Image (tube, rainbow, N blue to C red; front, side, top):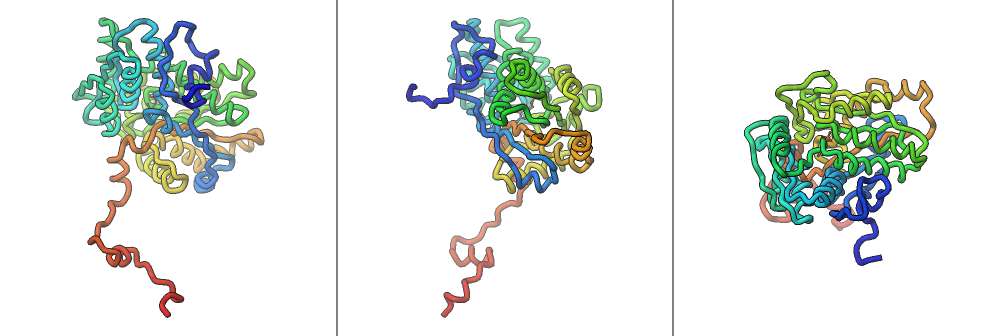
Length: 371
Ligand SMILES: *Cc1c(COP(=O)(O)O)cnc(C)c1O
């Protein structure tokens, strides 16, 4: 074993399932192997009748699950001797592409909807040396632009319509199955451009076919109410939500999401921004998990299904005893500090003295010490 950590990153960990060969140069930041946490307190708070597990994808090297796909996409780009990669992004794809391109020693160009991108994500792309191009438009506009450019010029597109992204991201499903000892009965996930829901469903199916799990989960996808093209059944021209990572009106992997929903017997529903913010605060205050708003959408969705009686009906219909819900917490809360500051109470400031702090806290000295 070398001096480096024993987890080799998702390509080496799941090589037999990955589209790589002997000559593929592996560009990795040792992504994956993220924590899967039991969350009994949050489970009780929302009234979920079966165990809740949270997959903390914010623990990936750039702070989101995008790294799972990017290690494969950038490794393949290098194998194919590409000199540059390009993507449209609500922020996390750009941050990840920029980091992996830096490590590979190739150029990265990112096109971002400047008015809707969280500051942490922009900072990452800039620091990793990407050429950052801000457009006066939304993600869907940015995506249209990069698809057109990469079809004409020698630049590799690394958005999730690049199949290598999906291949890498499916490793999240493998990890859950390896940890739980089976696929979870329910898999809850936020849906934006719909690459991740597509990737997880592919991962669960491949593991099942390989005999590494004994069932397939029902896939429960959640979109923000005013950015819910798949739920509405038509593109949304002007999507709106505080959860910028899922603020997408015309998802590229629409068909993959519908297939995951229908083949698994699951559903795709909406959650409001208020429900997202409530879940966002609960995750942080009850479980110690600071995630970005888009990530909280899947917990908000599970809570909504509980209120609607979904899980009670499922249990009556004969859900197996070892059933659990796995929620994918897609990105870290530090990505979007502005949202947190607005959602929480501003800290109160006082003069710099112990007395002032004690006064503010209304602390009382214990009676015994007042002798
Ligand atoms: C990209 C992203 C999503 C949405 O994933 P899709 O594959 O676009 O559906 C959700 N949450 C976070 C934090 C993301 O970065």
